[in-house]
Length: 62
Length: 293
Image 1 (cartoon, helix red, strand yellow):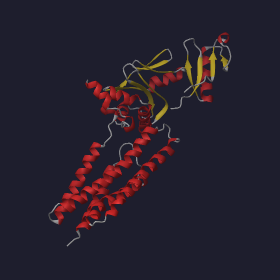
Image 2 (image 1 turned 180 degrees about the vertical axis):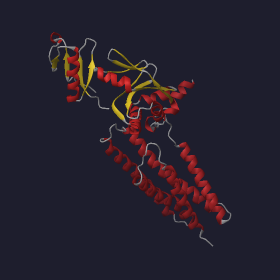
Image 3 (image 1 turned 120 degrees about the vertical axis):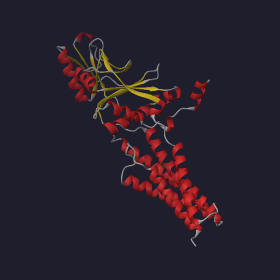
Image 4 (image 1 turned 90 degrees about the horizontal axis):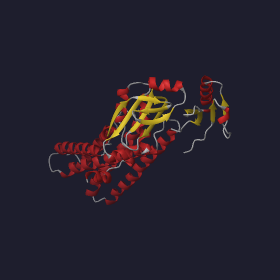
């Protein structure tokens, strides 16, 4: 089962290379808020990568 | 003087229907539902008992064609299985957490099997009444006792094993390393949002299921087993939004975290221990044989 990335919420615009909707936040707090809101809207799970990016994946079918 | 055949048939029908009632005990899973589910299965049980009870008297009266009714019974019981299967599968879409196909298959199979138990119990009861040469009242008593003993014996050997019989179930600490969620040392998932992490740390219960042997590990590693566990937990204790389970491929332990509505770790452990091991997933002989070697 593959889960395509729905969106990325990042603090750094330079690290992003397209292909997925990207939301740039000004601060960590704003990054969390955007991810939380997107997660609710798109019914997605939010995951944090070690480089600080938040990615949204479709909620796993359980 | 009472008619012996009639006495045998009526006693056997009564004992067979009683058997179905005993097998229909309302367990903690509340299935089949009351009252309509019970009524359906009691009625089918009565028919099964009637078919089982007339077989021997029919043979004694050289009515060999009547025995072919048993094939009709088998067909009818298969219909019961199909009916249960389709009825439960129809409910799957609306369940918060579905049972899963292996669990549905197991339930349907056990409903079919219970009708065979009723049929055989009636057969045993009527046989004892007809073939034990003694007083009428003693025949009836012996027939009833033989039928109930037979029912007890068959019900005992066909009883499902539970998760608690093949694995230790206990609670364990939930903790985060960065955004990664662990129960004990088993990685479960990544939780990106601090608010969700806080919810899980405050209200989540971590569970470890440790199989006793390799056969149990293979049984429990099937996704159907874990699906059945989560389904029963959701039905009995209620599941909030989050849960996740993973297997540690080295130790064969299963780690799980869950946010239940009724936050009672002891009850959660008890519910998981009582989840039946699904017949179609159970592994035994080859692995046990290898372990013994």
